[in-house]
Length: 592
Image 1 (cartoon, helix red, strand yellow):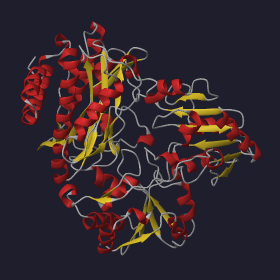
Image 2: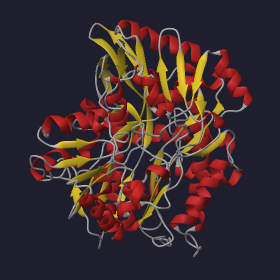
Image 3: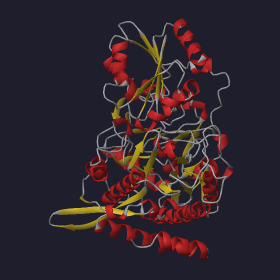
Image 4: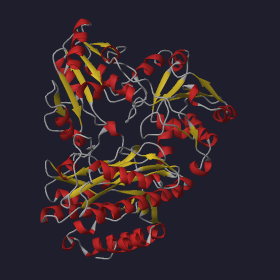
């Protein structure tokens, strides 16, 4: 509480009417390192998405439907108003500020953590408001603020990536030529890691490093903390004619760009970058060329990713075997302990690097919070009853995985079985989609929501997101969502080689949550006089809990899909299991 009050005192002293604190870093990353978690520091809300606005007398927190329940609990008894983003009657941030601020008021923020697009929208809608874009007030109230992250960088060989740095930068330069751009500024951390075939650990569970890149037709400039490089990497960069500079020198360097056609993505570059290049240059606002290149996996990446999913399926199946065989007799299982057991199973797999996000292991009512994270204070003991939702994944040298299973720990009510089976029907409907080339995820989302909508229910999030290759587990621009959410950037045309999760769910506050998640690889189906048809191949291999299914609610076609899927799961995983695990898996993948 004192943190907010102290912040407000500074606002009063500096005559600032409102201050914006997003969940972002200098690169508009979805997940951020500890240095940038100012919103969590001030509010206690730990979700990955949210924007805090502090005025001189109040504080307001915006977050999306994934976090409404969690945020309400975490900010309880704090002087913060929860703004449930997307709900009827809840204004957007721009609408709120338009109504709150009057002519002559000052709106402030750190211009390095807000995107150019967001600030330009604010300026457009707040024409008579003073904008102060160089205020990092967090520095004044956060005495023990963590340092900027530091981790050593390592290289992925083309055996894993399928394309060299030179091949990738040549493709980018081709797009620059097509757009008549002379300079391309690349600030997305995932895109830079992809371009250089380099990875690190500057953000927890997202293997990237803080850096900026400037590309011309002749040169490539990389701005980063060079202490993160060993001699071999320095040689690799030198061989590829990559010019190294210090991290913050980027802002000085771009001030000297003159009379250039600069390709930038206003959704990604921060406002401070924009301010430093707007004068004497022509700015060309397009998505980074690497965005789509990165999302469309090449043949080598696809082969490796499938290998990663087999490893991950083995790990999860061993975990499920352990849980199902011990829940009746164990009194020591908890959300945290079984999460740790699952992580150990992943760590035993060859090429394991890290988990791809903090495991969501949510028992009973905890699972109604879509992105619940167990803590010592909330850690629930598991009993042989009700439902356990586990959303988890791994980073391997072969790729990144994301899987959710909801498991019956004992007998279920008829309503729970109805809801579980409905979610399964939703998964099957989207998995079996066949569609014309040019289709977007938005066109297909109703296939997943349809069975749930028939129950007059819904889930307040997208149905699926793209997945990176040993990068962010959430990757633009592909996804499944029933309406456009601009800040999510997941409405791209689906293209063969894209990998997207399929994860519909049902969430009942204070009761339970159910989600089943597989990853789908977009593939070519056929081409004829009616056009080019695409579809999906499911590349997640793990049992869907037969104990939770009400069989009579499934059609014969749905049973056929489930039986074929489980047959594939058994054939794929059986070679890696003990005899006892094989026998158990045979039972849990039997035809129904």
